[in-house]
Length: 221
Image (cartoon, rainbow, N blue to C red):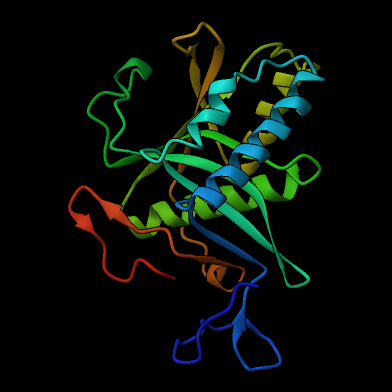
């Protein structure tokens, strides 16, 4: 269970367990231990099999990326009746080079790659991670979050088209399209930073708020 220690002040709206400690339904935190990285790799592998059954390629390198200790991996954990369950994960890339996206000399930005959610939890986990990303960017002094989405079969009835429609509903804007180094078609998408007052009562975040100017004070919310 995600809890606050007794000497930590809980944000307004956080629930409390029987011992008076604050609890959250979700926690967003860095994936750093070997066990956590293996759990993330397993989630990505399960998601890859789910995608493959629907005609999408899921390169094995996506799984390997979450085992790489050099990658900044972040996970969304759900408190499921006292048991902690990983329901989503992604990689953060700070100070991304966006020149190939026709974004010249961008303002402070953050790029997300290899975002995956556990099969069966797609809608809520994707929505929660988007809320967190927009809020995290706002608190970190970042203007926009960039990402890539698969664009194969992007007609309105195709799987890719439905995915982009879903992402638009979440607040992502489609900037254009391109290809990955291995030749897969992708759509370039951008999410404006937007603070969500009260989000800390739902999602406890311990992801460091690192900016171009170094760590930001009060990064743990």
